[in-house]
Image (cartoon, rainbow over all chains, first blue to last red; front, side, top):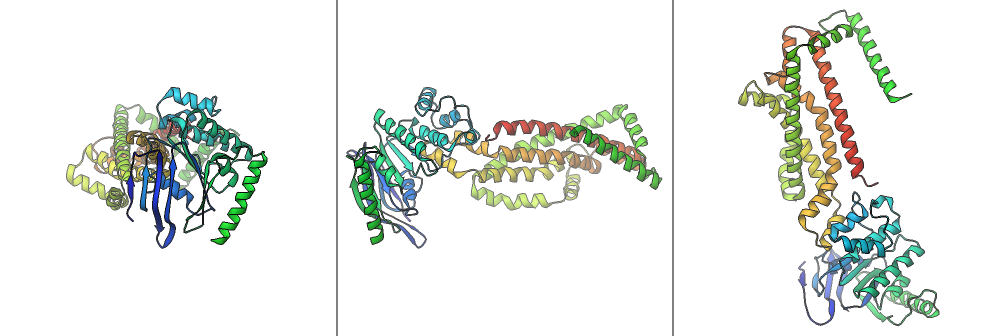
Length: 243
Length: 248
């Protein structure tokens, strides 16, 4: 398969996915996928499990370059919050952060913001799942990325930890504007974090619909949030059964 | 019961069985009594030639260890990083590993004859394949998810090698060192016996020629004791290194 990767410097578009298709042997994973993300925007890729969301985000991060079509990238730095924390087991929290950026001031600041100060000398095995995911997030935000990629980062976390980390991410976004792509199958996560939801079908994955959710309050207790969540859930059930 | 006490009981049991079997056999040529062997050990240890031989053997062991570990880890690291190199060199290393020591001894004797070089070369040839393979496998089984993290954050190659690959192979290197230290004494002494002109192996060869079984046993006992002490020291040190390295 040919791969075409280009870095464009035009307008405010940070990532442009154009007619991207991917096959794995005879299995058609994506077919003619196109969308774009502008600077400062948060987009959720919402699709059923196994539809290839992780593959898509890996392609955007240049970790998978085996596809046809074109992905244009107009960013300098990315942060990637992996599904599993991917910390170096024999290194302390501090050294894990130092591995990606040798800037002690920024590391100390990130530790403080992520409520990790006091744990800098701990090795990952000594931390809870939530703490490890915070380190994963601290690492992603450390070098002030233009684009933050989040690949189902809350899968193994309880609701309280999940909400607390989401709050940290949104706080981080307030401090310094960056774009986000969050991959999830959870409508609530998508609504809380995104301005726009791209609803994906099952394989071969296509874009079913794009939803503007920028006006929905990011508060799970608000009636408007719950109403919107319910609307999207109904839509998902309907659209996925159509496919 | 403390472990030390159990060890002492085990040693006493061995000496008792040895004494009984020696009494039954009643032949100093086949199995001299422990009392006689212990007496010979002390008498041999009071002689300068034993200490010189021990020093020579110890020096050879040190050289073999150093070359085997440094070269083995370096070469293993190199071929572990590259699939093509690994596929090219793996058959040769496996063949080297399967060659009996006696074959190396014969070849080395053709080239260097009897002397100091032979035992060192034979021991390196016998022990290095394991070190190379252990290291290469360690590099190849490095968690690719960690190297992806490095790729995303554009971490420079030297740092990736030092912090991820090298970190990943520490247990393999320590395992390889433990295997080498466990075998190096035996291999060096056998090589000295067959193609050396000094060292404990050569003293054993002389004792055999003089039909002095008690000296053969005494030298063996000395080698075993030093080997166990060195192995224990290395084990303790490597355990400390591993504890510092481990995830918890």
